[in-house]
Image (cartoon, rainbow, N blue to C red; front, side, top):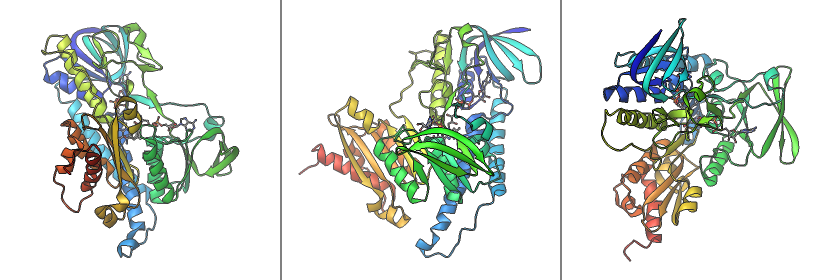
Length: 473
Ligand SMILES: Cc1cc2nc3c(=O)[nH]c(=O)nc-3n(C[C@H](O)[C@H](O)[C@H](O)COP(=O)(O)OP(=O)(O)OC[C@H]3O[C@@H](n4cnc5c(N)ncnc54)[C@H](O)[C@@H]3O)c2cc1C
Ligand SMILES: NC(=O)c1ccc[n+]([C@@H]2O[C@H](COP(=O)([O-])OP(=O)(O)OC[C@H]3O[C@@H](n4cnc5c(N)ncnc54)[C@H](O)[C@@H]3O)[C@@H](O)[C@H]2O)c1
């Protein structure tokens, strides 16, 4: 059966897909969302941000209990109850997923459960989850199919078995020892959780720097802080093979010029994710792909002018707020293409790109890294350590710093990083400042309550203002 006449079909009902559909239907576009997963909710809710942050909260609280003595309190950490941690996670995720299902089924657009593939540039065929197929046509499309785990060939891994973030997030068993493969956000957040609740944790990262998205000094400080908590982080490694040895799993790798091996109860594979495009038959629609990903332009178009993409499926940054921003822009640009909205086509603006990692301590950054800023601008950079900041000292924080980057001529803040307590919250002050194109001097003059963690930003702001010679003598 062929049905016609959608203005906007969204493939994928995750964060990007829902945001795109909600925007399009508000603009009066006849919209359908096609969701092919067995569960409704998308990665963020079901197996990404929300479950991982729920677990991390338990790890963080365990760490606080361990430090109770420092604050004059008698408390002893007696271990974690994996079943209770999972039950809390399942309850919260169930509520978030129910809410998302309600939003998708509220009748503002058609919500179709099935897996879509292009037949041609205006037609998709949907293999319905409850059997049969449907053929749908539309004048514009949004591809928002997200990502899946990218498997690298590591000898012995398949036979030995391993966990991915999916298993970690839904297991009631807490392994006594864990080896995490990879040094990205997923590996380090899960490592931080396990370290917190008391597992012995080793991280094996290929290159020298963990968290490639950040500056080297930030990544280095994170390694120092995590190692201080007792974690082993091996960098500049080459994975060789994996095998089972009795009840344990053994990872062989090159490190510091020699072959080493580490035994652990479980291996957690976190070597990256890849765009989920293999089932979409993109060539039939003329969609541009590059290096196994969809090549979307700043209008979120990906080849044909009526096909847009948003979220993990196209990158360049695989985080939720960017997925939502791209999808909303794509929906508005689709409405413009169809004459439902006036004005020039919008472009996605990455000036305020944000990144946060919820390790203990947290890492967060906005705008340009120092590495990229140096390539493009004349800059002034200032840092201030939490170890020298009154409220952070009261807080018991020993590690971390804030870093502010300003463009020398315009004096505008063009980037910032923070590693330390509540970094993912603290960074938002700089997001707002950068949104209004504030200078370091503006930031220095904005009132900050004392004593707060937030007032730490005024120190690098003051240093930059001095250095740019804006301060009165
Ligand atoms: C462990 C983990 C922790 C994370 N933590 C954070 C965090 O703290 N903060 C943050 O910002 N980001 C985090 N992320 C990343 C974040 O989850 C993703 O960037 C975001 O969820 C991507 O949204 P999306 O809409 O692009 O994709 P998804 O939410 O994956 O949605 C894609 C949807 O498309 C469906 N689909 C796929 N193919 C088809 C098809 N052919 N037909 C129909 N439907 C299809 C899928 O079933 C899925 O529901 C984390 C990721 C992981 C794995
Ligand atoms: N807090 C957050 O916002 C958050 C949390 C989790 C995930 N995410 C998103 O999910 C996506 C996937 O995260 P990820 O951590 O899986 O991927 P990633 O690509 O960020 O990290 C993978 C890491 O594995 C390393 N690696 C690759 N091959 C290796 C090998 N053979 N040996 C050792 N190390 C190797 C890489 O150098 C890299 O550090 C990211 O894009 C991230 O943005 C975001």
